[in-house]
Length: 86
Image 1 (cartoon, rainbow, N blue to C red):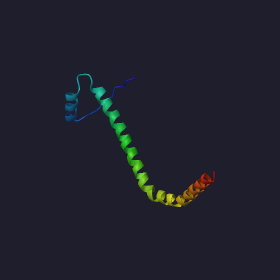
Image 2: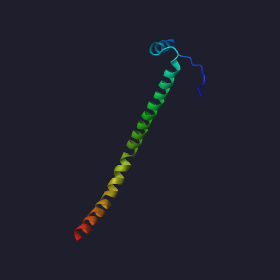
Image 3: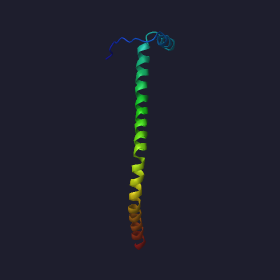
Image 4: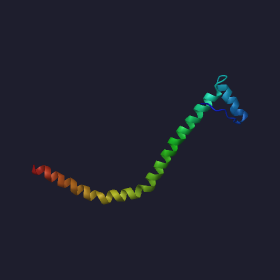
């Protein structure tokens, strides 16, 4: 279902809109433009949030990896010893 709204745009924007659309297709272009903007902004915001979180947690993650590495190494060595016995 379509809904009519009134939008006020600068004259220069309307001129561009009229240059790139054919008569009667303004609404379709505006719809596509808005959907594209929201989609790309959502992706960009997600990328930025993921990057910020990764940077914020980098030190914690490195510390956790350093703490777990000896345990993983020990488990790996034990596994290798079991394989040699067979």
